Image 1 (cartoon, helix red, strand yellow):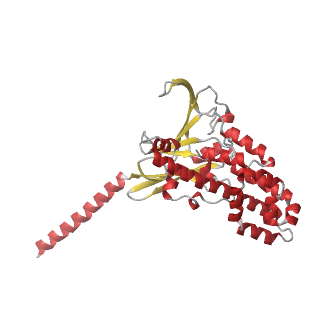
Image 2 (image 1 turned 90 degrees about the horizontal axis):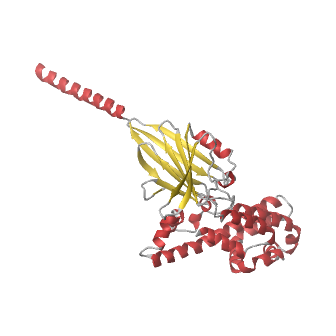
Image 3 (image 1 turned 60 degrees about the vertical axis):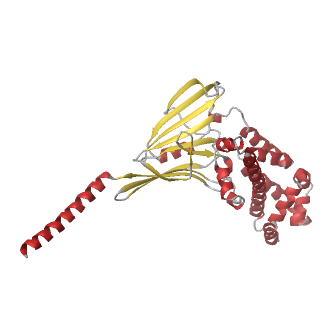
Length: 365
C-alpha cells in the first residue's frame, strides 16, 4: 500500500535529473522475483543464536543479489519443492546456523552483498543478572536513511501508528473483513497523511543537503534560514503543483521563488546535487522481509506483533527506517531457581532461629 503512494509521487515528481535513479530503485523494489523471506532468531541464554532463514519463491531463483538477509556456505542449507496452502508449487530454501554471538551476526551484515547491502543493520544482546531472575534483551536494529526527515509520529496519531507498523496481511484482513468500509476509509486517511509525510521529508532533505553543499558561501546564511522557515510553504506549493513539478524545477521557478533569481542561477548545480541526494535517500533500494524472535524464558516486553502461530513477528519495511532508527526488541526473564531455594533456606534458618530463641527465653523464665 505505502509503496503505491511512493510510486504515485514518483510519477508526479519525475524531474529529469532524478528520473534514472528513481526508476531503477522502483524497478528493484517492485521485482516479482523477490523471495518471501522470514528470518527466525532463537536466542539462547549464553547469547548464542540459532538463526534460520526461510525463503519461498514461485521460481527456483535465489541469486545472492536477490537475498534480503545474508548467509554463506558454512550454514546448513536445504532446498525443497513444496505445495503451499493455495495448492501452488513453490521452491523453498532454508538455511540454518548456530551463531556464537551477535558480533558474528553483525559481521554477516557488514559483509553482505545481497539485495539489502546498502542498509545499515546490527543485532544486540544483553543479559542482566538479578537475584531472583536473569533478564535477557535481544534486538535487531536498522539505522535511518534520511538525515533531515521528520518522525512519522509527527503526522500519525497512536491508532494510525499501530496501523502503519502492522504487518500488511493483518491490515488486509481488516480491509477485507466485516468492517471493510470502516477500515478502507481509515486506510485512505493514513495514506493521505503519509503522502504529506513523504513530501515534507523530501523537501526537508533537500534543504538540509543544499545547506551543506553551499556551506560558508557568502550571503547564504540568510537564504538557508529563510528556506527552513518557509519549509511548510515549500511543501504546500509542491503538493499543489505536483503534476507540474518537473517543469517548475527544470525552468528554475521553484528555486527563484525561495532563494531569489540571482541565487537560483548561482547555485543551480548545488540545488540539483542536493535533489539527487534527497531522492537517493528517499527511494531506498530495498527488498522487504520479516523477522521472528524466540526468547529464552518468559517474554516480558516487546514492540513486535504476535502472529497466528503465536510467534513474535516484525515486518521490515523501508518506511520504518526512513527517518528513524527501527528497533525490533524483545525482553524476557528466567527465574533463578537456586536463588529461590537459597533464599527459602535462609528465611527458614532465620525463622527457625527466632522461634528457638523465643522458646529458650520462655524456658529460662
